[in-house]
Image 1 (cartoon, rainbow, N blue to C red):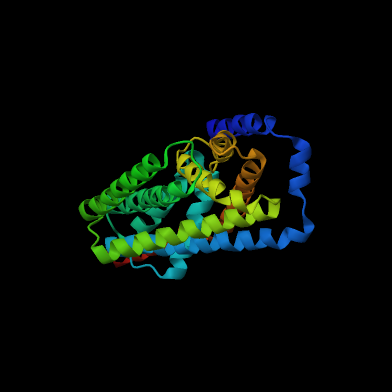
Image 2 (image 1 turned 90 degrees about the horizontal axis):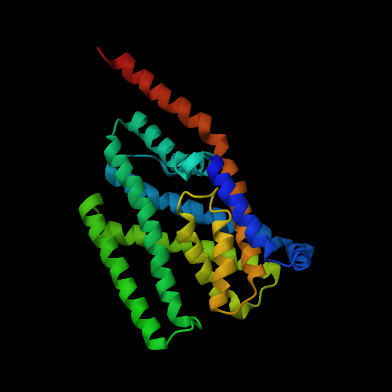
Length: 292
């Protein structure tokens, strides 16, 4: 955890040294646009609800019969631990252990389910980025960009289908459901990002490029090198805007706002940690009383 904090702190310092603080102050305070911040918070949490629905499809397929309410509480508890425990995977480990103790399922099946949910999220990010690439003013020939986008998209879909058939054993209907919900998650998070950019006053004509960089930064933030992707996302925007000759301040500040929304939303999960710890112990105690 100390290393992650150090990496985040160093990256944030490097990024903000490249920004004009007078502009940062000017963009940060817009009282009349404050409803956009509240809306961004709501939309972000809607994306987490959709993400919990997607994860529950995997879990039901693995034999976990968890109601959507309990699943959502466990999902938020995992969010809290992922952000505040070392490695960025503490929440995943917590969810796996809770389900292992309460449903007596093999750890291997639960780990595979969790990894499938994570990897499918990354593949969806790549798919959306591929769809956006031909619409961007990239400094390469248009036919080459289109060809690269289509080839990458085809590879993403092939990996998604093959992986789910061999590892998770999902049928095409299940794959379509998790892929569709994954698209929903990312569209809601892009909407959240758009609201943050609108709050800052970023030109609407540049939003598409910022969205593309946001997708790239989300892929980079998956690596457990920083606290919740803080610093990595901002660095991606700072150095990525050079491709589009855009002002980096909008992207960096919107990315920092996205982290703050993630952090405040994750705090909700702290309310449910005791609920699941007690519940799993109760299930274990009941099993011990029923044993000969």
